Length: 151
Image (tube, one colour):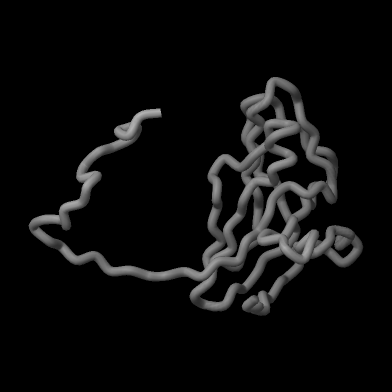
């Protein structure tokens, strides 16, 4: 299993660094849980979108991104997920990482300091160039779009 080092900078003052660093909960975990660095409980009403601070920023090595993904337990039990999933933290972004949560349930939800609100997955990035052509290769599917194969 390949391992890289990611530089992390706190945006929190020293007396507010009770938030844990992103971490893998088990040996086989693909994502690192990330905690909410809210100063006071943050209510999220049904249908509402909130931006939750994490209190840190990162410097990823070139050629990598951090994918921000929902936590399945929050989604299934509370209807809390990410509005843009997966979100991407680019290797040249140096600001505080914030998590865009949305409440898809019918009940209010409270985000509290230290709650594990998302997962961060380190992923390699492949860059591409486009080549303009007159025709695309023929495939069995062709131009069949959404739902063309049935339910």
